[in-house]
Amino acid sequence: MSIMKAKLKVVNLNKSADSETINFVGVSKSDGYDETGLDENNTFAKYTPCADLRIVVTNPALFNTFEIGQEYYLDFVLAKNEV
Image (tube, rainbow, N blue to C red):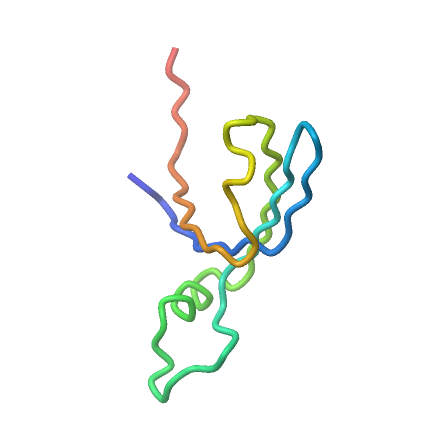
């Protein structure tokens, strides 16, 4: 079971021959709200107002998967040490 869900947006990509570095930030509504202020990104920004994540991908099968401006959900699930 997830203990937290975040919504992140790709804001920067740095590509090299053997890796891609992807920078994400927490979503927010940048083009204004209607009178209710209801919007999925506004809701996520309210409860997770600040997020900054950097991932370095070294698996060539995943290269060119992410694009600037795309949004993703990230579920935090407790990793159990099972031996």
